[in-house]
Image (cartoon, rainbow, N blue to C red; front, side, top):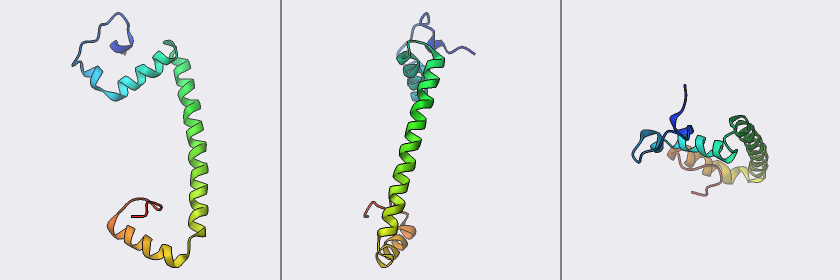
Length: 94
């Protein structure tokens, strides 16, 4: 199935459903950034995902370390309030 938006011969019309879909727009932007080479676009996105995954793992380790350094008495009351109210993440301070 061909995407008409990725075909330069098919003109885009304002209000076209393909123009309104952010996923389609992001897909076309990634392909355009790689000069229309879909394989290069996929490769670039995989590399970016791997970099973000490693960064996320590092931040998760830092967060875990921070939680180990917090006093159990302090964190017990804050965790209980957050669990009841469903507020923010562990370090939001709400």
